[in-house]
Length: 254
Image (cartoon, rainbow, N blue to C red):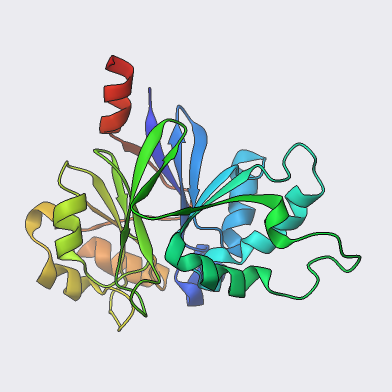
């Protein structure tokens, strides 16, 4: 069985039009398993890549460059009897009120009435993690804006995806302790909500730095500068191989 991570976009909010909204898809044997975040540009990239709408999405946080595509996805699924109510949205329970306010509170989602925004989806609130397609995904809080408003994702032994965050060494030492690839938010220069390269070099040891794959940056020039400093930097369309998840191995051998 082959596992991979495909980046649909790698830009921050200001660079999404050029680099795509930060989003990725975990693939199994070349097929999409789980989309991470759904910005407007990310949904378009997903459609272009897979010629279909996503069937399962994990939301890291509710800034619009990560969730704006949900409105378009609503209209695509609400009127499709085969899809309506079946697209899974895995959302940290603490984010549900914020997501409701961002995308679902507009009065009268349809002008003719008769529909709620969530009718189109299967909303699954999660805490420390969730099961999807017989795989367990760990969910953990990261440092982005207010506490408790952004979360990362781990597929044990395979991948850790930070979402938007400042450095989180204590989290990575716990959740990236089995050699996982670490897809990490990082720009050349950090700010109070996002990591900069100097921040990561100050906070992380070599074991973590060597496993970083950087995304969510501000320009192609930034990417070139980080590559020149010896780091791997993702680009839209990049597909990287992942190790087989630990739990998947256990289930297959049981």
